[in-house]
Length: 186
Image (cartoon, rainbow, N blue to C red; front, side, top):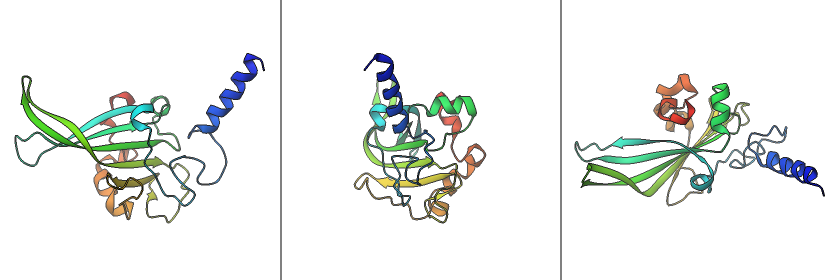
C-alpha cells in the first residue's frame, strides 16, 4: 500500500472515531459516551487525552478556610477549535467537570488550596438534534449526568430539570455553560 492510500485509510479511521463525524446513524452513534437508551458514561481518558478548559474554585462556607472544592473542566480535542470558529459547541461534544476534594495549608506563598481525591464527575453531552425526547437526563440541547466517585458507572441525576438546570440557569444565554470560566474558548 502506498503512503497516500495509508493516509486515506487512517483519515477514515480517525473520522469514524470522532464524536463530531456526521454519521447519520442511530441515537447512540453520535457519542461514544452515550448508549442507545441515552445513558451517559464518564469518559476514562479525559485527563490524559482531552483539552483542559479551566478550573472553578468553590469557596468554603467557613471564612478564611480556603477552597471547599475544585472543579476542573475538560473536553475532547477539536471542541475548542469548533467553538472558537462557530461560537457553538458541536453536536456530540462532551464536557467533563471533575469534582475534587481539597486540602488547604499556609505555605510560603500564603494560604493555598489544592485538589486531592475525586468526589465525582458532572458530564454534559451536546445534543443539537434532540435525540432522546422525554428522557429525564436529556433536554435543552444537552445530556446531563452527575456521578459519584464511588460508582462512576451510575448517574445520581434523576431529572435534569430539577437536578441540573437550577445551577445552570445563570448561564442559559450561553447554551447553559459558564463560558467566561473557560479561557481557551475566548
